[in-house]
Length: 206
Figure (cartoon, rainbow, N blue to C red):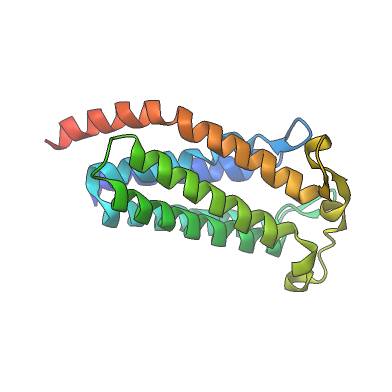
């Protein structure tokens, strides 16, 4: 268990940082949290490659517990427009994180015997897509308003051109596409630190 402490601490730091940074906008479609949260997939993939799927899942569950704690704290803090974290956002965040990360572990393990970049890239792309779809749909889609009837998400369902340029869609779809695009870009960039960190940890384990 001691060997997993760095991974658990890294995952916890990413989850906490992302929960804080999501409160700050970056341009029109993103928050700063969009740039830190995808690093959770890097941590999961490194743990999976070096220690296997079982330990990787334990790191994921640790991150999930930290995320639940952050969401609960957020529901108790009132901002200008109400709680910093609504129950829909808390539900979407937790479900998306756990589902996407466990899927990442499973896909990575299935592909681990191929080229070194194949497993981390494929698992992160698939996990990121599922994560984005689940979170934004649960948190903001008007069709799921019954989840938290007292939470007004009409602002997120305003019909606007996709990313200001494309077809008219609910605002939350543009937010999701922008977030997903960042995840895809970081999935490619993360291959570099993945290779370096795995090489170092593998040498230590050996």
